[in-house]
Length: 471
View 1: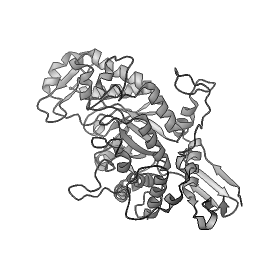
View 2: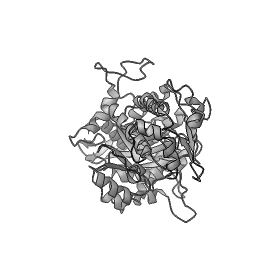
View 3: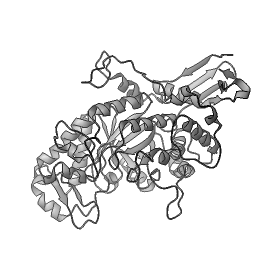
């Protein structure tokens, strides 16, 4: 018979996660029992909430371009893992897949006229993600990883022959016009993303670039902007962080910005630890900055390296245990898996990501205790994900019974749709607005996470009158 079921959550995000929990509890029974009828076996109650709010995947669309449809697929599968953040690494040395209204030649840095995300595409992806309880955090990396800008402003590039790699970069101190171009770029594109956070890179700028030759060539710029002790990089990082504050956003930087330079950041700036957590943790605690962990969670790595190092879902589940166990939710926002795309394209991205990222998602949601046995659940999740249309790597030899009777209804379902009612569908705005002029998606997605009430927007609870079957 049918039983009453009550679902409670502080926000629609929690509701989305509750529905995903129900979906994964759904069994396809064989023809000998109930002729393939779906049945749901529930305990009397479920109370679930994540250990960390930041549970992300970094997607690199600069080394390889991924069409919007592929990003939608990634967001769908992320929602099945209750992941909450898409860290969109948009631009890098190889390409800038964007078209600008204020920098007419920016699209020259794209691979092709067909490998560009329009502003409408960006708004669509942000909206699509929000409907699946996922925030989109863009990354605009300066001043390193900017060789692609050579196709945009070739007169504003600097090359240092003594650097064996990454020796050419956008010379932000070439003149005030170049520096203002960077600021204009950020002013144009940051508002397209509704999230509180914006990642501003700051990594892998080789110290050999910042030498006396560079300082001498830019002495006038330093004088105009009161740059002391040749702190050119610090000036740019601090300026970009300040701009984020003016735009009502919070800056994130890779750990070099804190560990290798003497930038003076406000305390709200977040540090992304990618080179290891020990040094970054010490520096962040000393400076009272919050952190995100991405070290050792690189999905582009082969499952077994030449040194024999294992990079399976189980390794990713266990590798950062010591660090997470020592972390406080007040200072550690969470972590993310990274899909750097030097050797990943649309044909391989899902197999590279899943279910290895599922081990990371499980760690960030459920527990910091690596001793939990979760292989059977990861195995079942993989089976269910394949039935829902994902291209996953197999864990081991075996057989997925769910594939015997694939219901089209189940296979096509990719999460709750249209959580926010459309009240303005004009292309000019590209988003929905409520009566007060604010984007209701933004209010539902982000405002809850900014409160100090202690409520987690991803938390949810469910209860039924009795153990039983919901047909």
